[in-house]
Image (cartoon, rainbow, N blue to C red; front, side, top):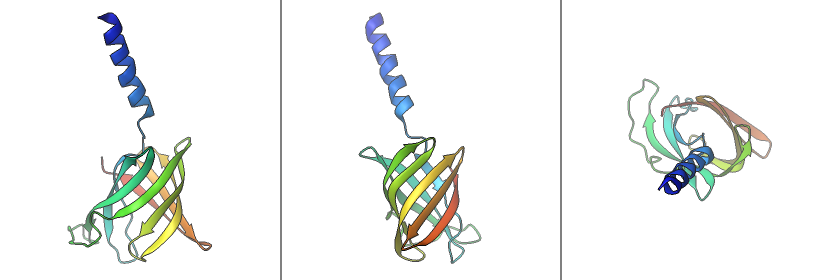
Length: 128
């Protein structure tokens, strides 16, 4: 019985140790139109992906948006020390896809992306 319990505890500890710290719900910075969103980052086959879960206007009121449920981040891989790279990010306000990277620092996530030498960056705040 002790061995079964020990194995269960080790399995749970290993799962917690490998859990991706960037996963969860994030508030974006306002876009070119003053609107912001909530993006849920989740595990997709060992990589980090993100979907737009809610949209808000500059006053914080919930907005109806065709972008709710759309994939915003995909193919992002952990690169160590809170960094993520190799992914793509879609910017709804410009309808462009950028090569992206992210850097996690506590409850802040630096998200940046470039396409043909044009780069953008935002700092997102953790919602949960």
